[in-house]
Length: 354
Image (tube, rainbow, N blue to C red; front, side, top):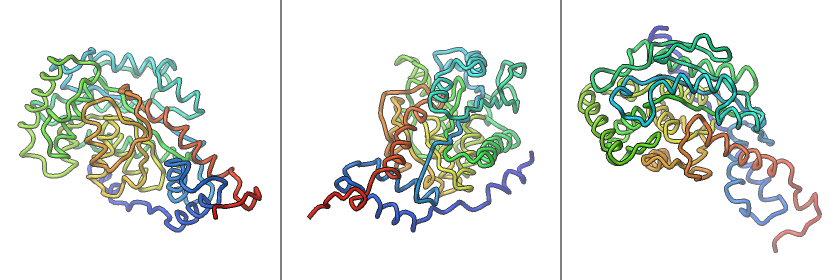
């Protein structure tokens, strides 16, 4: 895929939520048999979904989850508590149905797709995995850009493809997840550029680094920022130089989801950085985002603040894989059920507030 092809769909306008439906949903909430506002954010979720889905009966029963995987060249710098081989091993685990996200998707009745964008170990013999093979992982970004322009465009287009398929399958909500040893380092470096903040404020333990490991990780990110900062002139430049295949694919999915009007439930730290990148590339994308949880990863709070986001839950999760979003999904479902199925005061013949 060429750069021109990628830019063609990136130039499409964003969908616009139906504000008239917002008012209709708010009016219904006021008529339901409860004190106004007593269901708190569940009411807000239902109203927002009504506007996004352009319907008086919002619903998120049909959900698609896509896990984007890829290796990171910076892993050779020893910035993870786990070896790089774990990326491919976890892809195999997902393909066999043994990951946390597999369990959650089955429990939720959600469709699940596993996409390998490029790993050091070849996984193309696995069934149930979509393979793009953009390379054996990204380049080590302390020496050179993580991706070429072609790799960036193909990764963005992988996200585009997932949303296109979700739309064709009449999905009502999208959850994106990721897997890639070293991707908290990549996401943190990208966030430092997008927020113009130092790595010390954003760098966490990732897969479980101790204090010495975190200090080393900060130093690696600092070297990368020094290498690339002067050459970054746009959010896409930042994504190409500091990002990962899976982070770029998530970014593409989030942008195209906003273009086609598909609500999205954002997972944790890495997914939120991709959401931030999408918003920087195409302002207005965040109108289509719900934020599932606040991760225990250090920088996640700053990312959420930059997005003006209020996460639904905080359970000290930091697994990734879309797992936090999957756990929070039932809150959206319950919000819809309450909005659609509760009786109004007139239907129930219940007296209203004086």
